[in-house]
Image 1 (tube, helix red, strand yellow):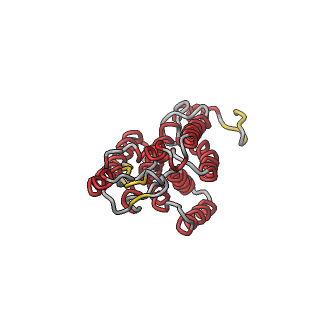
Image 2: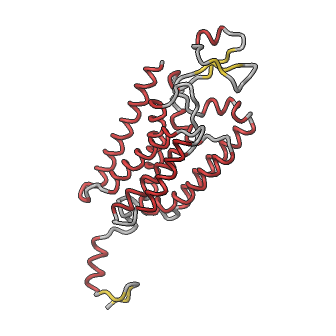
Image 3: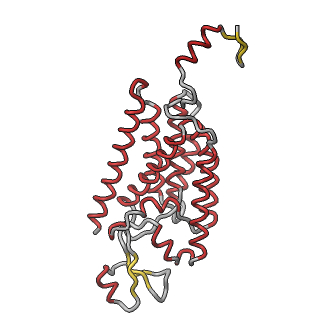
Length: 274
């Protein structure tokens, strides 16, 4: 008999398990992360660097913020009062105005905003809460999913949040922050907990509180939160429930299809607004 953490196992059982389990393979495929904290720390560092750059160039009035935050359609800003804008002025009218400065959005071709907005913050409380949540959720999920799949959840959650903002928010509003990714990770955690028959009540309570605050809090993008949550839960379901015999192919095809659908939704809405 061979000593184990839960008692003793027969040599034949250990040998069979070794043959059936690939070394360093994750529960849902892929390679286990040797340092599951590294990816989350990198994401946090990118957010902090962008945040510092925005603060040093004017905060909410920063040209960098205008370039990175998500705005479905462009809007006409005031040169004299950078925190004001003309809601009814189109681009041609705005450029003819002495006090007009056109701020481009996704409909103007600034498609990178659907990604960069997830790394864009101004308010210290906003970035603090998002990064704390990212730190508590990220490493544990990467340990279960593996680095590649964890990054896929983060990326598709950000894309899902942007797609929801494009369709459901005021086209001239600016949306920023990693909250879409955070809600996507909460959705991923809920799916994993359900898959392993864990206690999902705590996760549901946490989600309920955050969603309620998303709707009643001022200046909070409930659209981005809902979009990130749904996308994160969906991509994690594709990962966790993939059939074992064709797991990798099923996951790659499913995640690629979801990415295409989200991109099509964003492009179609941008063309409508243009």
